[in-house]
Image (cartoon, rainbow, N blue to C red; front, side):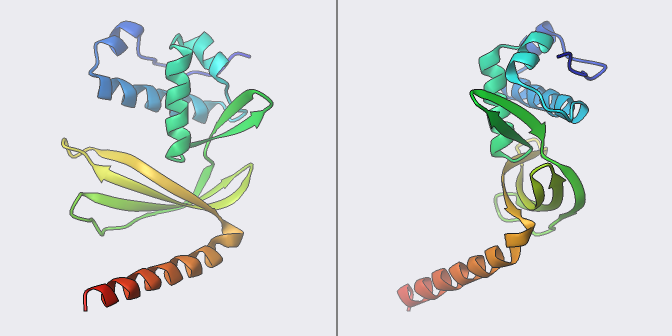
Length: 166
């Protein structure tokens, strides 16, 4: 199947001239744009055929996008179809920053798999650019139970540590 591609795609030569970190970010940004344009999903084979990037490189970057919850994969036998992780219904950032320049962004997502609360951890890098470090998605229907368990866990940890330092 022909994928819809962004109007401007970086060339192989331009990609090779980037620093490895910049190359990785560029490929991931390109993949997210492609996922956005192809809501029917994409496979590694389709991507490799049309954007001429090595399959292993694409698979590695898609795995990263899934890990940080920017995308999700549906497995159909041995084939994985990748999708952009839903339509953002609501987004909000925290202003609280920890000493390591991490902060959190909260999203309400709606995708083919249902409705979710997505908490994304971000960090400012050495150039003060924002980098996604990870995330967690919780189904709407289980979110309040999740919060109760998280609060209970936090109280247990706090109580245990306060006993240790008395």
